[in-house]
Image (tube, rainbow, N blue to C red; front, side, top):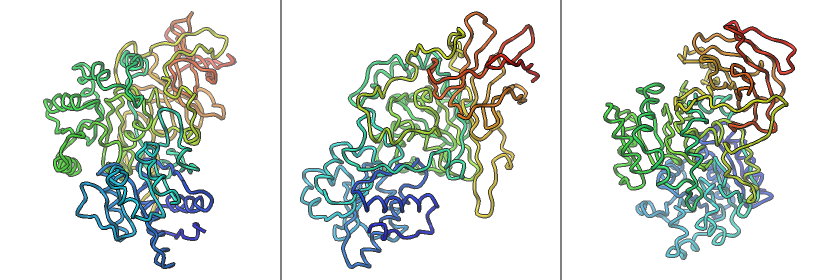
Length: 548
């Protein structure tokens, strides 16, 4: 029984130990397990403990159990190498840039997928008797280079680990993996203090920029936007000025990373920020390894405030004291979005990460801690329109009242607070909430609270565990409006009624589409009556005067 190999590792967090037990348990029934676990929650630590258990069992039973760990980037191989060293597990490395660490006599090998599956290394691959294969960032495992591992080692037990088991073509992962084992939702990791809370700012999803992005129809072979199409739209002096403006407004002086479109876009962003006296550098695939290491170390040491990168820090980059993430690159890939925003959610004391979404990606993918149907993505549905923009037209009507969707941004690209998440975090002796630390913020932070866009110049509608209320952004005052139904919203939409320009329909929604959808429900109505502001319940049985 493979489950008998699993040992209690007291250095693991409780959820990592539970994950390890589930994985070994699944190996008693299937050969190929895919484990989903959010960015920043310790996937490398988890599978290193699994490797240790297999290695100890091998010593105990006097059997050589070959273990092959697969990664596709130098940074990932370095991380795995360091983790194995901390566990005192002897290992070799099969990768072009690690020739000094190659030792094929050892039963544990870390290999780059490019090297181990290259035709010129077929004899080397065949000579290593792998009984277990662990694949890091396994959302790549459907690619042909990874699939060769199943041909070379058909009887090996395989484990893939990823934060994002999702494919843009919707085909799923069942050709390679037998079962998906999902971890608990990101919300739970935050509530238990294992991931950092965050504040999420974005341009309005009805802004002219978001509309222009959603109108792009020039896609690459991978299904994502073509670089030249994005450069033409995004790499302009006006939009770069908005990037810098949002930096000064929300994160001035903080340490962060910016995700850009291309090398040229990175250079232009650096020029703009550097001219403002900000210590910034750019890194891309063509940055020499020695220079890249130095720049990353300078960043971690505080000698650089910001690093701009092109898909370099989406995987394998650990910097827990990262204070903000700025998205300047639109994408159609949920994997890229989750990996990028996840960089800032690694726990570091009482840190609250600030996410600046200058391209409105939350409108397509939701927020970082939204629940996602990983099981459905794992199974796949190639017929589904998996890449349909969340802003495409939907003619469904919420109720019999006539109202029209309103562009609340009025064409302005100004960043607004979309969500602010606060959670307690754990210390060795006690649990402390962020509010006890005297954190200074622009708006009150409430766990699992959502807010609408601004209406009537200074108000937002919010929903939390108590129900719905209205918040005055100028004074910070709140007023309760009504209780909520059992289902919590994903967003609150503000829709102007067609016949009364000073009346809004408040809609609770399970999505962030800019249009109404069939499952939306009406909360009530907010309207001006002369100088007075009033709230009318959905069934029109009560009217509340707004007093804040």
